[in-house]
Image (cartoon, rainbow over all chains, first blue to last red; front, side):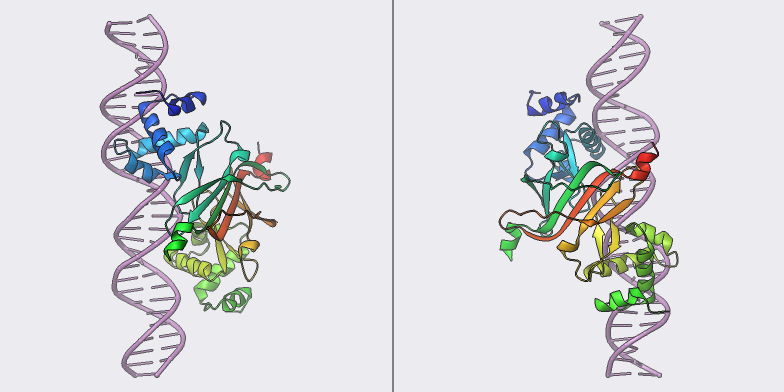
Length: 139
Length: 139
DNA sequence: CGAATAAATGCAACCCGGTTGCACCGTTTT
DNA sequence: AAAACGGTGCAACCGGGTTGCATTTATTCG
């Protein structure tokens, strides 16, 4: 298999690029919206759900992808833009309640807040729910 | 049964205060943290899970309570403070990854963002994940 | 190189939160 | 009092997520 962006991503984070992992990474890179486990399952019919699940978890641990809770009830995943994928890199998401798609507002940073004394932050999730332009037009 | 805060809440929103609904409302008022369906189930052992579920959904529809996705995978519910419970009233939440409790930062408003053209907002969810003071001290 | 070891994968089964269909029961209406 | 309606409990279901285990694939080491 040819070495592509995927492998660079993984090797940079110390993850061995197995063929399955490359498949998952490619599928995610080709997706426009953040994808769910189930979506990946249908995209990668050669792979078992549990394998995809484990690859995703591995990726999350190694900050190759991050998980988004968009309020649909199912987790969505997307490739981290930056090497760090720290809180400052996290962006806002939008969940359309009509078409059930999740949008990334990559240009909109999550506004920071001051936590009360003693609380320490690991991650932030900022999701706006509403209607996307396409669905609004369909009315 | 004595008329209390619960009934006023419900009647103000046009919801008939049945005994079960009063039970759910009381349980939620007595809780410190936002509660899940399962937690309510153990608090109200006389009620069936599906009944609690339906009461919660009814309350959400009538803006008596709102649902929070704290990233634990299970929905949490809490009584709305204000009559309106509009976006401006929504506050920030904190999910402790150690003790799995959800905290309300009622004083911290969710910072607003400008959505791209065409997107309309119905609700916002802002959740910070990390470690709470109690769990940090236990180390 | 080939055996021993470790890692990755597929399969099947499971868990659990959420949800629904349906029958029953209590309340309201006429 | 009968009919209509809403609320409730029960049981069953659904689907996302997760795990145990056996098998395959890759890696290490003699």
